[in-house]
Each structure stands twice: as structure tokens, then as C-alpha cells.
Image (cartoon, rainbow, N blue to C red):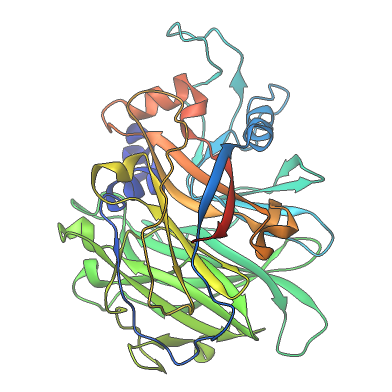
Amino acid sequence: MPDDVRARQRTGTGLGLLLALVLGAVLLTALPDDGEREGGGCTPYTTAAWSGDDRLTGEFTRYGDDETRTDDWTGGDGTHSVRLPDGRVLWLFSDTYLGQVHAPPNPVGESAAWRDTSAPLVRNSAVVMRAGRLESTLPAPLFADPAPNQWRWPVAARVEPRSPGSSEKVVRVLLWVRTAGQSPWIYGVPTATEVATLSLPELRVESVVKVLDQSLVADPSRRVLFGTTLTEQGGWTYVFGGDDGQAASRPVSSAYVARVADGRLADPSAWRYWDGSGWGPRPAAVRGAKVGSAFSVVRVNKTYVLFTMAAGAAGLTTVTSYWSCSPTGPWHGPTKNFSPSLPAAGVAAYNPQAQPAVSDGGFGTGGGRLVLSYDVNWLETTGASASINANVSLYRPRFVTVRLVRAR
């Protein structure tokens, strides 16, 4: 077993603690206008109310705790979802525990479901849901390691035409490639953004294409990975990304955005990156946007709403939001914060992701409810893997339902 895999099993794995660290400070201020401001109809939005989504959280508990399964998903983070044309929902995860979960009590005396310490840990996985019920885990890892000591984390995904104008649909999944590294890159050095194409309805991986290679950027903290979130509008896919500035002890990371025409996510030549005044062939930091590497953006009527962890110490427990009339800003906020529940003391929340695939269809009218997921993981790395195995709820997504309204 590679040294980096053993290390990740000891520390309780991957994207979780990485994002808990990088989301510690967030400052979103004015971004430049990309010339596509939508005029009338764009108004401020804020969170009016939120509540725990016990049904959806409970469904992942039911599926993960099912003792009849021996090699399926039992926990993971990096939660993203996409609704398929036949109504199924595909859930994508980064570092994932497989194996079997056992009913309480467990060997260390906790009254919680537990997994054996020898349970397999894979870099990514995908779970299929039908009619609100999780059915099966695709063979894991779904996306093979691209090279020794490298791995792939799936992030945002969408269904789009196989090519522009085609009636055939495929699933396109953004992938982050990371390479094993030394401190401060204990959770991997950012290396590249890729796009995988999955067939429908089989969900077979047809191809993986590299769209942005960052391996030649000398300073790893300035390497940009795209796909933490995406939105679709006007024949374009807007793909958001960030760098790992906080891993190099810079106060905050920088935000980026790219756009790609429908049907061309897997075509590297179709990608154009916001450079502060227009769309060009090379990514540049969006001026004034300082974020962690994981955040989420949705479109509500003609307004874009961004969810991220709050600034400072609250960034380990509290979600906040910003709004803009354009994918490139200017962003305004923060607006009303909320602190979702955590399963234990010493556990952090991170990676807030809007999940339109399981939201009611009305949130786009400003009066409906939007489902938001957040990942949880043990904050202290020492003994984290043992804690996660002793209480499997410490490494699974949780969900809240958020009601967005026009701000006064």
C-alpha cells in the first residue's frame, strides 16, 4: 500500500480535513463586471430560514448502516449530485469508506454504528438514488488513479449534449487531480482539472480528458482547480474554481470562473477563463474574491447566490451566502448566517453544496426551498481514522433545507 494511502487512513482522509482548513477565512467583496449583467430582475437574496433535512440525512444513514451489504459506500465527503434524465440522482463522493458497518454497541463502548479498521478506503465513489432511496454503489473507485501517487476527486457534474446540438445526452463530471506531497501539502498537491464523460443510462466511464494542467506552475499554492461548483445559463456552463493559497499560509485563497458552451465541457479548446475584463485562454484570479477552495453557486431568478463557510473561527461551524447579478460579480454580502447541527464535539462542517437535484423545483422562483449539504469530519487529525470508524456518522454528509427570499 502506498505511504500516502496509509497516511490518509490514519488521519481520517482527504478532502474533509483539507477543506476544513482552507475554509477558515472567507472574504467576498466586489468582483468586476463581465459585461453580462442581466439588468432588471436581479435583486439581493438572503436565507430567510433553514431546518435540518432529517429525511435525506436519514437516507444516507440507512444506506450506510445496512449490514447486509459488504462492499458498498459507508461514508465519504466531497458531496455532489446530478439528476439524470430518467429521474435517478447520481451522488459523487471523494475519499470513501467501503466495507461493512456493524450495529452498536461497538468495541470501544460507543452507542453508534461502527466499521472495522481494515475497511477499504478509495479515492472516489458514486451512489445511485431512485425515487429518494439510495440503491447501489457503482464499482469503486469509479475514476482510476491517473498515475502512481496521484488520485482523482470528483466535484461538480451536469448532464449535457454529447456535442453541441446533439440529441444524445451524457454526464460530464469535473475531476480534481492531486499528487501526494509533503507538508503543507499533506492532502495532495493540486495538479490538474479533468472532465470525465459517463454514458447514459449505463453510467459507464467512456473517457477522461485533461482540460487544465497546472503541474508546471512552480508555486503549488497558485495552482487552480476548477469544478467546486457550476451553473448553467444562456447556453453556457459557468465553472467555478479556486487555488490552495491557505495551504501556503496565505490568509485566503482566490476565486476563479470559467465558461464553456453547452456540449463542450470535455473539449479543452472550448474553455475560456475570466481574466478581470473578459474571457481568455488563461485563468487569472478574480479581483476582490477571496474564498476557500470549496463553495457553491446557484441561480435564483436572475440572481446568483453563493454559499460558503463564514470567515474566521466561525468557518468551522457556520454557513453564509453572497449574491451577485453575474457569475463574475460584483458579489455582495455576507448575508444571514446559519450554523447547522454537528454530530459530536470536535467535529467541523465544511464544503456547503447546493443540491438542486433533490430540491423542490420552486427554489428558482425565490419562494421555494433549496437543499444544501455539508460534510463533517473530525477536526483533530490524531486518531481521526479510529474515531471515524468507531462512529460512522462522523464522516457522512448532512443536509439542511434553506428558504431563500428577496432581501429588503
